[in-house]
Length: 495
Image 1 (cartoon, rainbow, N blue to C red):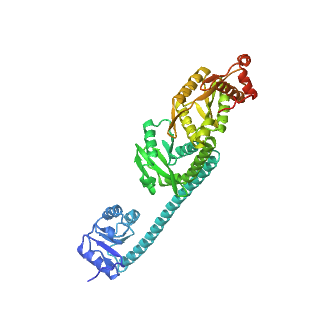
Image 2: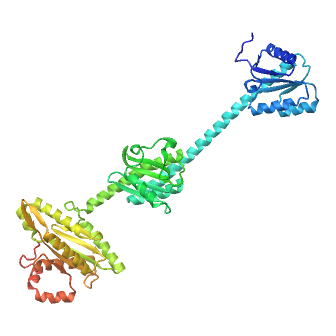
Image 3: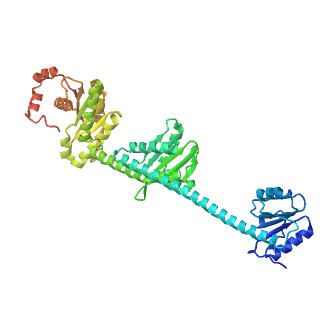
């Protein structure tokens, strides 16, 4: 019994004539090959096919087509009557390896089978090498694309890093990233959520639905929709959300999470792996730039904020007043300044001590903050003195606000060591434009003069600045005030 040897080629013998088929099978076995005894339709399982066609030989063309349909690489040898060179050439062009005229001489079948299998092995080797070459070319193409994308990432990161170096404004930094990534990645929305202090910046396409932007802001405030802000690896990093593909990447500084970057496409198009890598490459310089901006903002805030009352300090007052003064001159709009002093506050410090005095100043500052408008700027000018800048406000409006603050403080009862204490304030108002005010220092001096008059006339009152003529007339009527300004007596001492 001829057992199947996996190392020997398998040959399928086909013939409508049993005697011819058996004769060919015996010759194939004698030549050292295995004869395929499986279904005839499984020609793809053999290395060679010997097909005996006693008729016109046209059946070989159909067999060749069947082999092609089955993606078989079997070597086909056709045997039959001699039909002439033209018919033989047609079969060979169609894919047959050889055509043997019957009766087939001894050794002719064996030689054709040996040569056909040799050619088949060479063909398979060439095809294998071709497949490997194609695979290598595809891998090179992928690596070339990867290098191109990586180079694109490096250029973007370098460009952004240089741009970040030119600003310490967080909103401007997010806008820079939004403008570049929106163009590169076809985004509808880019948002940044910052954890401490909690802040959100959103850069959107002008045509985006406001509801989508609001949902994105809510997601950023919640710290992102992913698991602890973690970015999945590969294509899973893009998950459909809010009507489109969403990519969320954590922002880290020294491995510590400081925020989250959210990218969104309304089209629903998923993010490619190289795009995820590009975004991840941006996150480090973005996180560092935002941290620096926040640190700068904190330092600036601390430098401009009074540590006791949390109001703006004297330095901030000078900067803001100079800016508002220029704006008022440029646009010909009124600007008012209120200088305010807590009456007899020195006696409070002497009686109860400075810690109590500090607490009372904090409470006074809180009441001032409650009384003013959002456009007004309250500052601590120094000691128990406060200054309020009122942009686009005339003297009459400033007087109404000043009296509201004065009355609010006069009605407030402060609890000190189990006793109730009342405080009053004196206030002076100056307005520009005014003939006697040509510079910022003039505005402060005029408001300060008005404050002195308020304290001179009995305190717990509001005084306005006067024109040069009115002040000259008042000089003759107010000897006490003149003595104060000249330094006579102690009435000019603020307390």
